[in-house]
Image 1 (cartoon, rainbow, N blue to C red):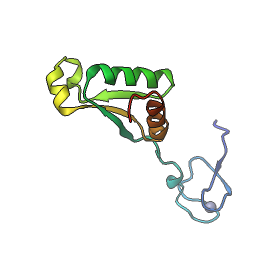
Image 2: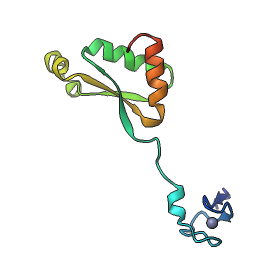
Image 3: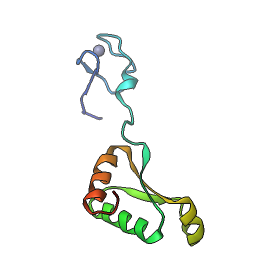
Image 4: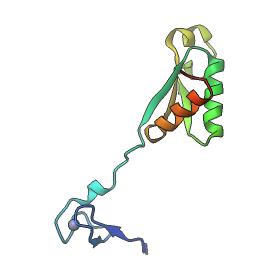
Length: 109
Ligand SMILES: [Zn+2]
């Protein structure tokens, strides 16, 4: 059995993990569990595969999860990537940290 304690976000009383509604105040407990910060957002746009790869490597070194999108799925088409830009994607919760980190390295302005 799971002994982890759960608490109502509305009244603070302990509730069961499986409860949908707080027995004490009737608050909807499903709202307690949200995925805030799990959205993926664009941290920066690059117009060079090399710059994009460098930025990605630096973020990964810093422990920030990220990936590149817009670079035509691995098949190297620099001209296409150049015209569209390559998006450096990070988790929303890491956005500020990622941008500050890249700024600190003068990778982005
Ligand atoms: Zn409650």
